[in-house]
Amino acid sequence: MSRYLSKNGKTLNVLLPADALAERVRELAVEIDEYYEGREVVVVIVLKGAFIFAADLVRHIHTPITIDFIRLQSYGDDTYSSRVIQITADLRSSVEDCEVLVVEDIIDTGRCADFLINHLYDLGAADVKFCALLDKPSRREIAIEADWVGFSISDVFIVGYGTDFAQLYRNLPNIYILGKSV
Ligand code: IMP
Ligand code: MG
Image (tube, rainbow, N blue to C red; front, side, top):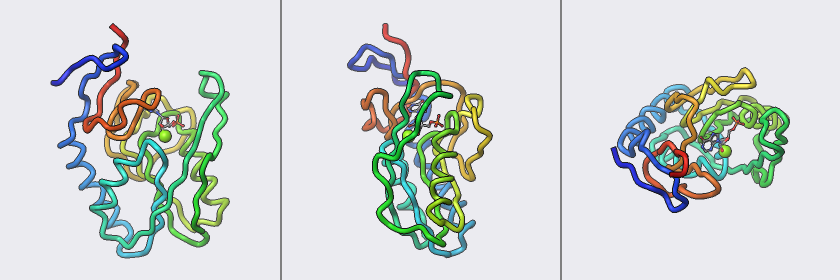
């Protein structure tokens, strides 16, 4: 297992190597295609964390899709329950009466997912499904389940394959557990 020190002295240990990610992403695309049976879908990609996952996923999807992006920011103090979620860049296309598939990196407390799903229904979506690469069920504060999950993981902080810590590590091809500074 590759292990090296990152620039800021934190340790990175591979949790999910690139080949395992690629295989699971292909499986998810098959499941998504089976569900939609050729109906047209609006894929909403949540920036920034889902950009690499989504780029890989949509290239294996045969369902006719259009693609749009949304960017969220969640801020407040460190206690999740007091966090405020804001849209910093909204969709440019209409989702009215559309079937929508949200593609997100991680469901953690569930607050972002819950916010997004409500937002899309407020915009008139006919149906909203949710695909998350990673799920941390033990961290959930809002009872919400994704329709498709790549991997269920324990309560660890991960980076890589699009996900970050302080905006770093998004470019790494594997998913790593970010450890303490040494
Ligand atoms: P939630 O609203 O608590 O479910 O937070 C989901 C968002 O938090 C994800 O879209 C990620 O951007 C971020 N996040 C949660 N856990 C991690 C992690 O382990 N690494 C990087 N980002 C994370
Ligand atoms: Mg995110």
